[in-house]
Image 1 (tube, rainbow, N blue to C red):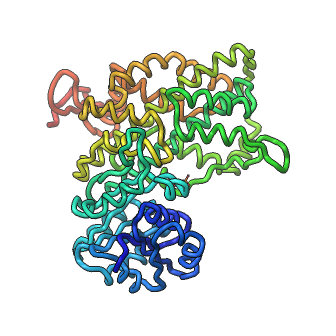
Image 2: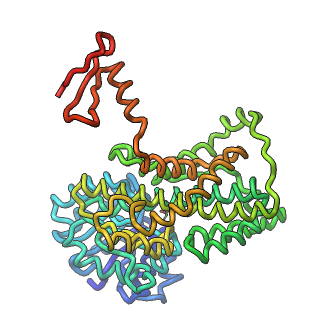
Image 3: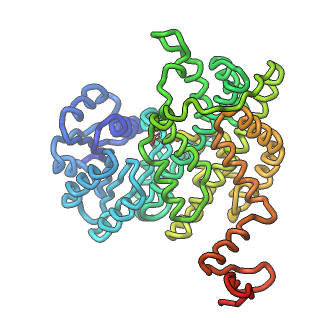
Length: 478
Ligand code: 6PG
């Protein structure tokens, strides 16, 4: 037994992760359900480091040093359970099985518990950064036992991306499903970021009259400021790309129906269960789903819209600057919502997640990597109990300065009939949070009227019911 780590499931993500381990000097056992993929990996990349290929699960397990560490890189869902069922009987107490797929955290909790009963550590590890990240340094979010991280952590940290300050973009997130949970929220935030960027593009084009190439330039400029991020960078690339066949902007020849594999949807479903408003993420998921409803869109295509005047070039330039502000403020809101969700789950499941550390490991490697994340890390360093990012002094100041422009952008979008569910929901969230009084008081009155659901008062303790269909006297109910 010579290998320090094993990877089973050698599609692109698995192969790239195995190569990343090998390139960092680790001896890597590799295995795939069909041997052809294993052979291809060795033929093409065997020279990059020390690989130990195996045809059977038994040989693969035998090639690993103890405690064995096996990374499973198969499609999330039944395939993962099948691989676990195949390997668990071959493992010994103290061995570590790592699931690097985008598993649902509840599945991870179930698997972790089952394997814990057998003495095997199961680590659900979120891995972000796509194919490129897997090869050159992803952001890694491992959950599972504290003990498993002792033997696994150094290996994962060695292949993870490094933040600007040199620290690895990998940390022990928390027990059982905590790692996959935060990866799920990462993806929800990814959806929100993408939606906000798409809205900014749409506004610059439809209201500002900018062509895709010009918008690419605008994004490049924004990318030198506070919006500096991987997603803004690649957006500029996509917008500047010309379709070879037609000579038209690439963005104009792509079907406008956004797909999704489901992690954003999970984020919203889970947020509903946790009772955490993540309206920015929810609107992003709904915007994708709406885009795919071609029947609905076809049926509504001829409906009337506003006839708004196009902006002059000077106005468009001013508007672009306002869109940058709206984008930034909305982004702060979606991150604030995402962090609230992590905080709530951490409390609910007893995970004790270090909120600042999540920002720290997302500074590099992952899809939402951005200069901005260091600010979030710093905000939690200043106040580990921070209840919302919007209350951090720095973010509060910036969002406060942006709010006039933000309102102008949302109002302009409405006047021009450009849908901006992300910008609008974020602004509504901001206004609701800062409101002195919310109309929720009226909602409580209605509930009490039709269902005797009771209400609390601002001036006295206890719950009350008014006899709405009687003499309208009020009674204490508890
Ligand atoms: C990542 C990505 C990765 C994947 C998304 C795409 O962090 O590396 O999030 O996990 O690209 O799942 O998701 P959709 O297909 O749902 O857009």
